Length: 89
Image (cartoon, rainbow, N blue to C red; front, side):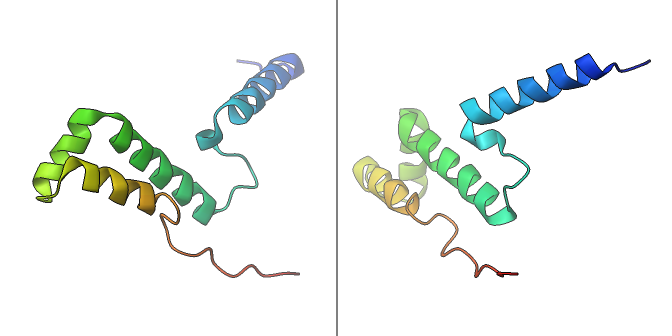
């Protein structure tokens, strides 16, 4: 199988389009912390947006559904704690 330059360009342009459209797909400059934050925020947003899942968490933690929604919204602010110190070269 021989990959032509035009095929490679087409694949890269499709990947760039997906990365621009959907933040969670990441990009080459995304570090581990930013990736983890995206995953956590997407998860919390999904829990809040899907009522049966929110009700499941409320029952499991013996809290009201409103309290669970509030807790998830608060966790979305800093889902993985403070960002690590950056090393400036």
